[in-house]
Amino acid sequence: MKAPTMDRSLATPASRPTRRLRLRERLAQMRALLRQRATLAQLDDHLLRDIGLTRDEAQAEASRPLWDVPANWRR
Image 1 (cartoon, one colour):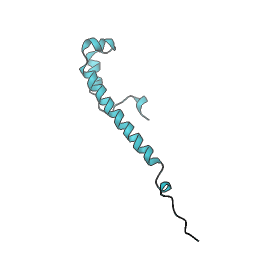
Image 2 (tube, rainbow, N blue to C red):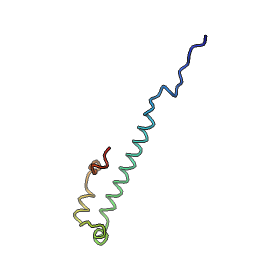
Image 3 (cartoon, helix red, strand yellow):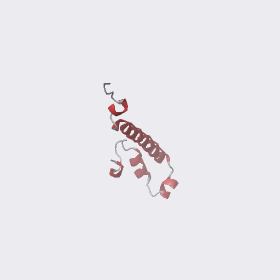
């Protein structure tokens, strides 16, 4: 009788690809947030008025640390 062999694809945790995907998504979100905040800091007063922000509000948002995001972004 032949000894059973283990299927290697079943030996690795199924969550590993999912974790990598989540990490990549999170890093992409962080890069996008940095770009958006940098762009916000460079907008002129006319464009800030168009979106309803003052210069001080835009600077405050642009200077927030990377990990300081709105609560609805957190999972």
